[in-house]
Length: 418
Image (tube, rainbow, N blue to C red):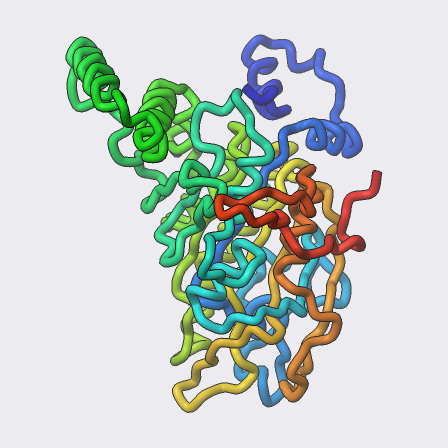
C-alpha cells in the first residue's frame, strides 16, 4: 500500500493526542513527499470536441469570438472563458497549450489519435496512453485495476497490441459499485462454485492450452477474485467522503468521477480517465458549453485543490482535453463544427512546469495553422517522460512490426528540473 498521506497522519495523531509531536510541513517537504510517490495520470476527457474559444483560448470582441466573455486568471496576463471562475483561480498550476493540431477531424479517428498518439491503422490497434503506463509501470501492490475509465466514453480506450488485459476497467456510473463485485451466494456455496469452475477449466484445457490462454479466461477470473476480496475496492466508493467534499466536486456523474479519480490515484492506480460528454456543439454552441462548464469548472478546481492538499499534485499528471476543437467560424445554427487545426488543452501536475502558455491561435480565424503547433504525440511523449517511461522504446507488435511507444518529442520547456 502507498504511504499514509499527511492528512491521514494528522488525523491519527489528533485521535491519539499526539499532534503536537508532528513537525511542520513546509512547501519543500510536501514537494519531496509528492515526488516519492508512485506517479499517476488523470485524464479528464471532454468527449465531442470542446471549443477552444469557449474554454481556454477565448477571443472576445472579435468576429470569431461570438458572445463568449473572458476573465482574468491566477496566471498573469492570461484569460480564459468566463464560465470557468473556479478554474481561473487554479490556472497557474497548469500549462495552457493553445496550439494543438491533429490530422483527424472525425470523432472516432480523432479520439484514437489523441488517446494513442497515432493515427488509426488497419493492420493493428495502438494502445492508449493508460495502457502503456500500465504495461510499463506495473505495481503488484495494487489489487484493483491499474487503468480505470469512469463514465460512458463513446470510443473507449484499448490495450491494443499490448493485449486486451490492458483495456481499462470501466465504471459507467461513478459512485456506484461496479457490476458483479459481490458474490450473490454465501461463502461456502461460492467456494463450491469456484472449485467446480477449476475442474471444468482443467478439463477444457486438455489439448487446448494455447487456445484457452488466448481467451484470458484464467487471468480474468484471478484478477476478479483478487479485486473482489481487496480492501482497495473501497476507493470506488464515496461513503468515506464528507458532504462538503462531495458538494465541492458537484453532485453529478462527472463530479463524482473526478472525486473517485483522486481516491484511485491515492490508492496507487496508475491511470484514470473521467469522461464528460456533450461537447459536439454543431448547434447552440454557446449554451451547450455553458452547461458543460457548469459541470467541469467545480470538479476540475476541486480536483486540483484536493490533489495539492493531499500531497498528490507532484505525483499526478492531470490532462484536460478532447479529440479536437471547434471552428472559428460560427455556423447558421449558432454552432461550431469540427476543428483539428489549432485547439487547446490543460496539462499540469507530476512536477511539470505550471504557469506556461504554449502556442497561439489567430484571433481573426484566418490562419490555417496556429503559432508553434503541437501534435498530440508530443503531449504523450511529455507525459510518458514525466512519469518515468522511455517514450521512444520499441516493442515488437504481434504482426512482427517494431513500433515505438510514442513517435513524438517531449515539450522540454514543461519538463521537471532535476
